[in-house]
Amino acid sequence: MRGFFLFLETQTSGMYQATIVTTQDELLQIHRLNKLNYKHQLSAEEKDREGFVSWLYPIELLEKMQELAPNVIVKDGDKVVGYALVAFREAAPFHPDLQTMFTHLDQLIYKGQSLADLSFYVMGQVCIDQAYRGKGIFHQLYQHHKELYSPRFDLLITEISTSNIRSQRAHEKVGFTTFFTYPDAMDEWNVVVWDWV
Image (cartoon, rainbow, N blue to C red; front, side, top):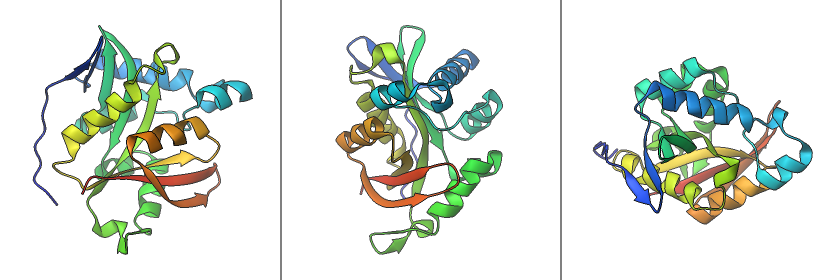
């Protein structure tokens, strides 16, 4: 595992600023975006056209995750217009779905090695405000993830519903590749990795 250096500076692209969560209000804005884009709140057409998020994150869970590692956001002034949550292994006990995900990931093989033996963390969820999609914010969120966390981790991993084609394509454009697909009681998932080595 590489040494850990956390840079608290921000990254600006045009009018939008990639940074980390530093206030309770920013967590509340993430929570609002999460609820607005939750798959059970959207029509089939909206899900196909815009994508969706699969999990609801209660504010208490967001607070616990934030204590372990700063979450990445993009802001337009004071407004959070996108987020990409940081889920370290230590966050797994906070939420049964996260625990299940980490347990499952530890059983997978990547490039001939068990993931349990590799240096990785999970992007817990990414979401962009509908009015701000197509403006490069998705890419900006992930570049900030890389700047902040690549000194400590070799891999960033997440799971994408196989029905969320918009999200799958967006992740592939950033540099993620699918290395495993599996079904569970909730959905069918592509496990994707962004290899920083």
